[in-house]
Image (cartoon, rainbow, N blue to C red; front, side, top):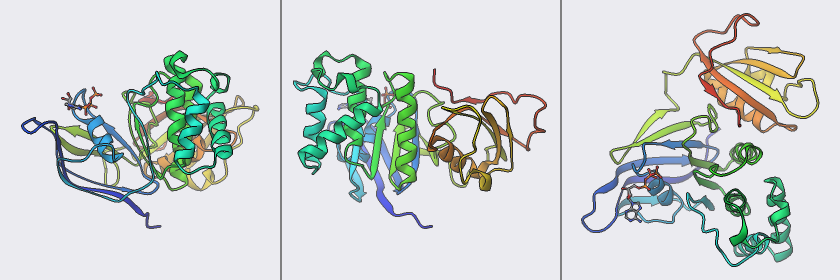
Length: 304
Ligand SMILES: Nc1ncnc2c1ncn2[C@@H]1O[C@H](COP(=O)(O)OP(=O)(O)OP(=O)(O)O)[C@@H](O)[C@H]1O
């Protein structure tokens, strides 16, 4: 199925000040609905600059940005010391996004609840801990069901449950056709789920992995654990993706999947109800003889 193009960057360059060094130069990028894109790069290379341009918060110095998806953004530094309670702030933002006030208030409570922050709904934002105010930062981005979600280290400061929940929401939103672009210093973040990974290097955007990439293993072994009731029920649709599955009595399963389908498998697991916890993702060159030796972990996706 052809995905709708949401946003296109052509020859985008950004520098700060008239004679500043170029932070970004010659950046071309197309973001289609449903895409999950990771951006990486060393400190200070321009990742946040790129994300602000994508979110429409910063204009490029040169080049063109076309497309105007409904966009939400979680900044690296959220202005937490605002003179509102969490729920008042979110309700106000929901109203700005076009919800009537009762719907905005309901959405505000629902997102705070989902991220385990319901008890702080009526706490002034200035009194919230860093983790709780980060939950508000995430909730404000999700309120209006964005078509493009831009997350700049949005997981930083969240507790383990909220980190997992945010991964799940990103997977849900992309499965529903929204695009998401994220920066996170933890390589385990949504490991294996991104459609493409780009690195900002010397102002340019290099494709590290994604469509057309042949460096990844031919197969991937995904270790998943069903949350909630014991006994692993494989989510519907997974059987069509995998080449083998080995399930233990404790509810843990080892799925072997062709590398090209590993994204789809991770999405199915992370988006399942009840959700699955992805413990480990291991690229392998051939399907493992199951039940013999444990594969060496390369990417561990367990939240701690
Ligand atoms: N508003 C600004 N005014 C001037 N210079 C800026 C501004 N924002 C960023 N820069 C500079 O642009 C460069 C890239 O910064 P940016 O924050 O985009 O990098 P980053 O890759 O996100 O860094 P980090 O990983 O540390 O968050 C840095 O040299 C930074 O000092």
